[in-house]
Amino acid sequence: MGDRLDDEPHRPPTWEKFQELIHSWLVARFGINRPLDKDIWLFCIGIAMELERLAAGVLWIDDGRKVAFYEYRSRTLGQAHREITNRGLLDDTTRATLKAVADLRNSVAHRHAIFVTAPSPVGGHLTGEYKGFHVFMYREALDELMRDFDAAAKAMYLWMVAKAPDLAEEAKRTGAHPTPP
Image (cartoon, rainbow, N blue to C red; front, side, top):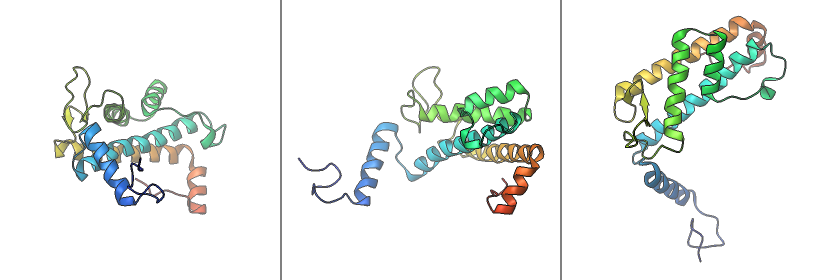
C-alpha cells in the first residue's frame, strides 16, 4: 500500500501533495472552498489568539507579575474575558469585543462547527457570526471585526503600558517591543 501523501512510499511527500490534501480535507470537513474562506477562518482563529495573549498580559500585570509571563496561568479568551469583567478591568467596548471574538472563534473551531462558511443548520449554534452577521458572507461584518480587533488590541496594549511602564521601556530598550496596535 502506497503512502497517502505520495505514490512512492520511500520518498518524502512533496509540499504540493501536502497542500492538496490539506485543501481537500478543509473542503470536505468545513466547506472551506476558496482561499478567501481559508484566510477568513485563519483570521478568526488568529485574532482570538492575539487577544487571548493580550488579555493574559492584562491579567498578569493586574496580578502583580509574581511569575514570569510564560509561567502565568493560561486561560482561554472566554475565561480571560470573564476574569477581566469580574475585576472591572478595561472599558466596556473592549470587554464586549473580547466576548464577541471568543464566541466567533469558538463557533469556527469547536465540535459544532460543521461548515464554517455557511450559517449553522443546528439551532442555537451560531457559526461564523460576529455581532449577528456571518463573516464569510458579509464583508461589512469582517470589516467591523477587523476594526474592533484593532481597537481592543490597542486598548489592552495601552492599558499594559500605563500599568507597567517599566516593561514597556525594557521591551523598547532590548528591541523586543512589539509594534503598537
